[in-house]
Figure 1 (tube, helix red, strand yellow):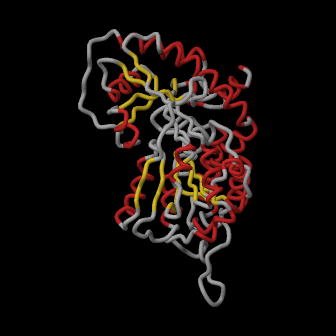
Figure 2: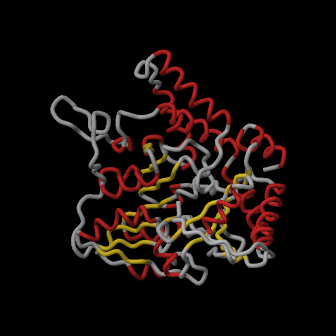
Figure 3: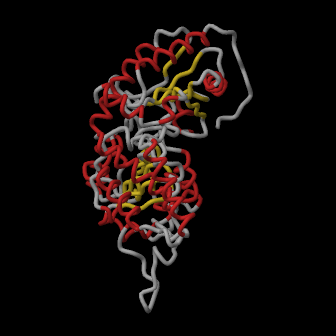
Length: 403
């Protein structure tokens, strides 16, 4: 992606003129076209009636663009209000858990997913952590040694929220496919940042939020369900869309919309459709190359700041655009707030977000820079200058919980 294209994208994104944004892993900046799509649908509903302004083409556009993003069929895509909601719906649709059944997860699993799994553990299922390799990634060979007939689910957070690790999702999928075990991928930080082909990943379920690297509106998420796996999932939530009356009985749909309801925000889906189409036009490979190039250079420059420690896992030069660090003398939330007062957005995560990994590494919290193709070298220079200045200030400590 050349600098001219980056400038075009920045010009089309009003937030770029007002803020230096390095929190794309939390929520990225939408384009003006995405904002316009949302407002235009709201205006149609306000002027013509919300029900009367319902446009099925909006949903079809979003579904088609999402399918292209994932190399899937539109019928395998459902929409949800958040990535966590999508994952929990799919997990709960697996049905009741029996004593002795095993759930294997990476050490970096998202806490929201672990909260769902905790209910299965109460029923007698066993949660087990797959060992990591020397670089801190989930080890496919170690996973293969753990497989037996009691393993019912393998769950992987592809790109953890607390750093730059990229887990080997496709290799994990090969193990799951070889043994016929259900495989769920949390792709919340991957969608919009890495190329994502569900055929290559060999996953049965994959989810991701629209608000992160896809630059869609908050309150939107994608859920992919492999067609051959669909019949194994019986959603607990049903209505006239997901389980329509056929004249004799209520029957679950055959496609992924068995996870949707008839009540949906078409305005948000209009925005998501536009964001997905913008992403697809730019191309996942071009986006990945730019983010990888910038994050590699930024990691190197961060090492020159006195008192700053990087906390990323994974092979060097094969990491994501999420950069985890701490700054000596600074509480991570206080650091985030200090930068915000200077017009710079970053993130800050605590143990509650990725508890298994943070506890294993003895880390209480991290500050997080998350780069997008929208970011520029000039913005990076400003960020580094302010971090260097703050590193030289006296210790600041506040008692603030992680947001």
